Image 1 (cartoon, rainbow, N blue to C red):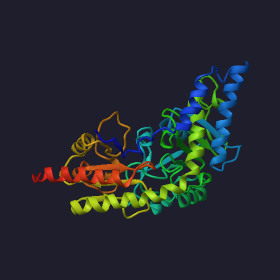
Image 2: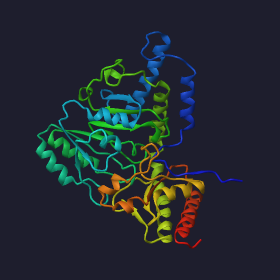
Image 3: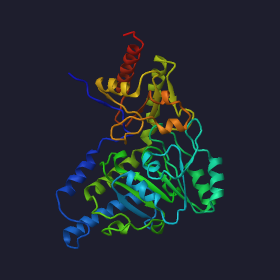
Length: 368
């Protein structure tokens, strides 16, 4: 009998919760455009607004804050970058491609060898900007799991009179996080056990955001008919994720046992971000001399799913800008994979990962 597939790529996407599937199926079984004023349309609008309130309440945010539903975290990030009156744009060198690709002209903030933003550099650049500045720094890195000092960053940006956008896609529901620290906050459903293709941008106040011409949906901030079923599923997923958040801390021991075993197999391997606070589920590790593509294929053939950093490049594997910003040589970055756990993973599955890694490492040394 074939062993079940071991899914260790939760930073890319998470399994959809059964409760989310049920809630979405109920919506899909009905009909109604939330912009229509008849009974079916009003019911659809009610579902959207209930989900909006559930998410704001779950995150401890004011009902006066603007929550704009989007097609995912990438779109939410793009809308955030167009915030009204932002002026100069400062982003960390380890941001998601949806930030760096959308704002190539932005000033990039350096990080240390662990991937943590240089706060002295941030403070200096803020002082030069005269208050007209938008700072975009993620809460948790999707490749290494490294956490940024969000509260301190928020304090510095407030001191300078600027706006702070935080991409919190990877951390909501996984670690304690105060969503009120940021002026603009990005979240995404499919990192929480919700559906793919729906996210949200939350603004402390609606006047921070620029209206986008179109159909007038989402208060004129994001035109297009709302994905009612996806939005309802998003609300269900976020509430459940927050309720189980304290369980994620236990994944650190599972992750660390994997790292210990892999490093014992090859002491020349290296874990990146280990010197900084990290998400409890994320392990970025290098197998020297073995390209990430080779590792991913070999592990996949062994029934184990991992990735090479971000999973947002149309399936292509390219050198990691995150590791490059941390000072990792390109040849080392090319042999690094990301293992990201979820609450469903077990010690037995980690043992399968270790065995498959060992087999590949021995083959690469010609010892199989």
